[in-house]
Image 1 (cartoon, rainbow, N blue to C red):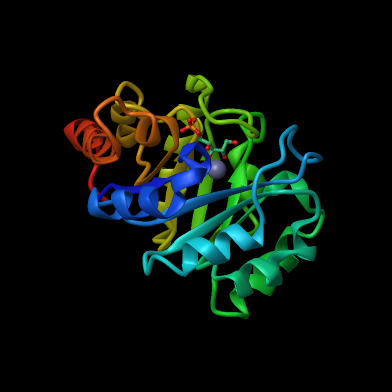
Image 2 (cartoon, rainbow, N blue to C red):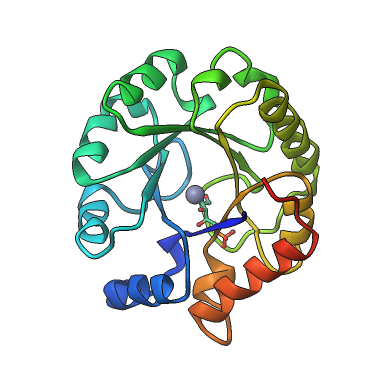
Length: 224
Ligand code: DX5
Ligand code: ZN
């Protein structure tokens, strides 16, 4: 089944609680919180206080997408703030294997993200230990960017690896996911869609944005 993970980066922050509730009522499956430090990516967004605030108003799983240098310094802080899934980038730590262990030891799910220019095979040595692989389909830092179609073969490759090895690992995509791109993404074997603009800026509202993504993905997707 396709799962939808709204990225609150494009929510209305003056009404964050209402936006979260509307997303839940619209049938989303989890929430995606983008953490940016102005170093790893050219933008600064939110930190553990926002994760804590979101945690206090939803029971759905929270994934924290850490776009920060050396995330090992902050992993425990985000876990304490209520993260259920910690996502780090392959590119932002020299000790990927260590951080995977660090998160798993605490019984929290670990995901690793790959920027558009990073090949799938860089995860060969850790993929057996992962709960999630996140294929970035934009260069991270901002919502509202255009989907980079050259990331589709990487999604197919990762789905093949996950299937061949029989892993219980989600395959997620983030960046430029909308009604037009969702079918190709689902057809490439992705089972979790992250979206900010397509949900929080949908002309008919949040629930319509979630429903549209789910319908469009299901139309051409594979069931995993
Ligand atoms: C990009 C973030 C995304 C972003 C997606 O750096 O990681 O989660 O919010 O935004 P859209 O869906 O608008 O491309
Ligand atoms: Zn993200």
